[in-house]
Length: 436
Image (cartoon, rainbow, N blue to C red; front, side, top):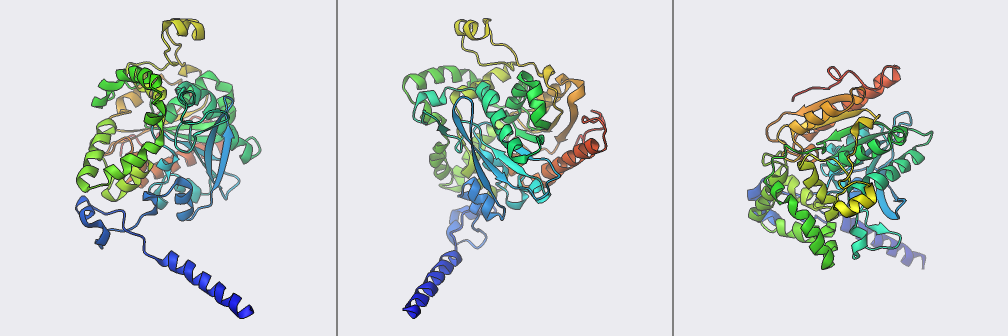
């Protein structure tokens, strides 16, 4: 009996080893030509980030992960991933993604990813996912097939999601420690909305905002897609009436877009071109990164949230426009009230890219000028020509152009705070560099 048991154990171990040693099929290649015969091409290889979820990517990259669920005051369930830090003297760092994205944005380049740089430096790293994105599709009473689930705009993300996730971070960090908040694109918008509406509360949770590709008033957006933004409101009414809103909102549409875009190198280039018409045609995203890219995007969001794009390109930074009648009932005026960024008291550092067509350099500079003098922590620009809105996280040189300067920004900010100086460095000397 004992001998049979030992044989079964040996066979089981052998099966596990065999499965693990089995070569995975190639799924990425260094140039478009190699994709034509990817399966048997020695130039191609397997990248787990091109097909795995965020928790799987983090584990396979060699980091521990803890998954949290947090319930907002309006009953949405949000998922937050944590890469535990090893240095208790360092503050937690919270990262939040932009529109039609998820926290997968921060882990797509392996060890060179922006989430793993601070983790290697000992920081406690938290990756948030706001409502409607793939990892935050839970609710106490609604499900994603119901219109009510998708009846939210950026206002609700700012009012409920951002503080809920930041409170979660602070609770588990202990000692009422403040967080360093890194937000990309729309994540900068909702952070400013939250901090302008509840400045004291925001200051109790956050020590520094770092906005990457900040989205405020995007009047200089260069994307030709902006001509379609006025259609968001009619599209919202039509899909709502036909109960199709969940089909166009859910991140699971990637199950269709990913295999379609990866069907052939020609289609892949076409998909990239379509995306880049929004964020900038000149990009650093390498061919081997594209399968990873399409594994993370689109991440899902409500059509009501997308109406922010129309408002911001018109020069508005205000609450959702329900029309004169409902606006009077909700806001007491025919038009929605503006979010007043002059009320923000948390220091803000801006990072922009010269060739970003969505959140342009001009708009970033205008935002910086409009921030109260006391909270201007600095501004840094990636002046490289072929570097667009998503290259901050997927670009070939993102490590050198974004991650290392970002860590320098954080280190300098903390050093000044430890030295007992002002928490906001001089706006002229506080920048890491104006150009790269």
